[in-house]
Amino acid sequence: MPFMVELAKEFPQFGYIKEEAPPVIGRTRELCAARPVIRRVFRARGAHGLLYESHLGTEG
Image 1: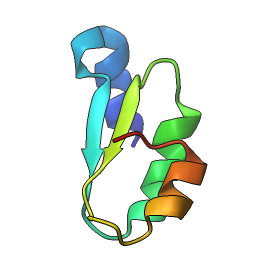
Image 2 (image 1 turned 60 degrees about the vertical axis):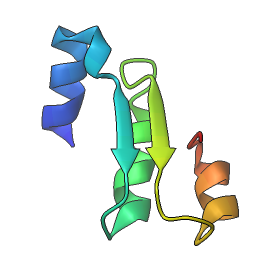
Image 3 (image 1 turned 135 degrees about the vertical axis):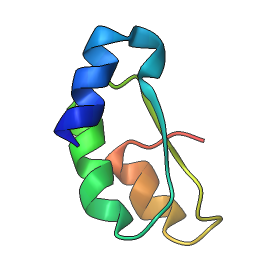
């Protein structure tokens, strides 16, 4: 995760991340905590975990 945050600091257009590979929850927490450098965290697991991931701060 630190690598992705560093990339987003250097290249602002990189701040949009689609999280889909397990284990999702730990990485999602880290990415959402790195805001505003990480601009958006999107989920891609259909409805599985939708409400909990929304509670963590994912979008779309």
